[in-house]
Amino acid sequence: MQKKNKRQHFRVDLLKEVSAFAKIHSVYNQSIDVDKTMPVSILDLSAGGMRVRMAYNLPTEIMILNVKFEFENEQYDLRAQVLRKISKGDYYEYGLKFLSTRDQTSMIHCLNMYKIKNTKFRKVELDLKVQKYIGCFVKFLELIEEPAYLITDNRLVVASNFQAQAKGVKLGERCYKTISKENKICSHCKLEIAIKENQVIEADAFVSGKKCTARWLYTEEGLIIHYHKRLS
Image (cartoon, rainbow, N blue to C red; front, side, top):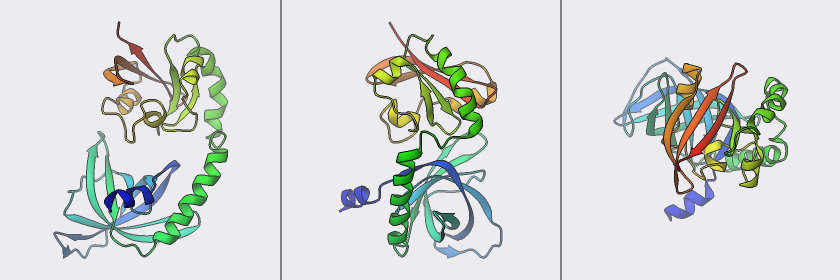
C-alpha cells in the first residue's frame, strides 16, 4: 500500500522556488498559539508533501506546521509534519509531509499542468541573464575532456559539453537526477561551498559506479561549472 502511494504522489522539481509562509501549529501534539510566520522556499512539491528551504532550525518528527502558498493560481493552506532535516550552512532543507488529503485532487491537477507546461518549455524558461552567458561558457566546457556541465545555484543543468550529451545528460533537469541518477542531492555535493568560496572546490565522489573527483567553479555570472575527473 505504501509503494502505491509513493507512485501516486509523483514529485515535481520546481524551476523557480515558490515562496510560502509557515506557522507552528503544534509540538508534541500540543497546540502552539503564536503569530510569528517564517518565510519558506518550496524546492519541490507533490500531493503528499514537499521539500523546503528555511533559515530556522526546527525539530523533526514532533512539529507540525501550517504552510500557506500559491501554486498555479491556486491558494493552499496545508498542515504538514516536519520529517527530515539537512543542514546547508546558513539554512536548512526540510522534508514535509501533508497531513490532510482534502486538497490532493486540486494539487495533483496543478502539478500535472505545471509538469506539462515546463516539460515543453523548461529549456527556454531560464533567467534572461543566464541565457546571455550560456554561449560564452559552452566553448569553455568543450575544452574539458570529461563530461562537463553548467549548472545554476538551484542545480539546474543549463549547458553541457559533447561528452556529457553523449551520456544522455538532459538540459533543464536537476544535476543529481540527470548526471548521477539520484532522487536527492548527492552526498558529496559542495555546491554551496563553491558559491561562498568563489574558487575551485573538489570532493571525492562515486558516480556511475566509479570513483572520481567532483569539481565546482562558481562564476561571477551566478553559474557553476561542474565536472567529474575520473581516477586512474
